[in-house]
Length: 294
Image (cartoon, rainbow, N blue to C red; front, side, top):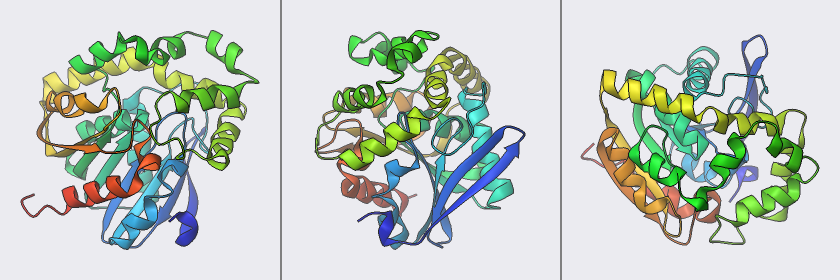
């Protein structure tokens, strides 16, 4: 099942001069789920999940966040609070969604979704975070020093990664995906080509790496917000791949910043869960959202 099986609608929202967000919507349910992808991906990360979510009665919005896919690639604004403000303006001003939404974020999208949930608490009903460390937590500090998470240091260096990767985007992204992949059939050549095309575009690689270069700012922002406003009180689903480095730590990490945390470990998956085992992820997400005790 893929987005070709449903009616998807593409749109763009001009948020301010130089910042345009591309998004895709599907379904007409009363409840809205906003999906935020990771690096080096685009909204297409969610292509296998969107039909299943719309069939369950949800309206789905999948966004290319600032710097990714068909969205603008400005020179700055890659701290996750600014990116969360982008998403808020898209939801409120462009899509005019009034009620609380469900936020689902994977990887970098996890960081944006958390910042959104902290800043706009009354506008989020549930948060699902998928397989990545959150800046400002103790788990993030531990993983940042882990040599298996080498990309955090490499991507944070100015200019040199762009110099080494430019012209070799396909080889680099293939290696990047494979290093965190359990289901080797999940990222097809067609999908890899789509991601390579996206990150070979002018300014796209630089924009993607700026996400990492903003981590120190994100750490400071998240710690200040937690100290000032306390932990999240909405239900939080902490998702990790069964074969992922981060997977066993997701619930522990989110309990640092949220009071009501449910753990989901997805089998037959490592980091790229939405593509490795989309059915199990959808089932777990819907079960979490429809739990009668919430």
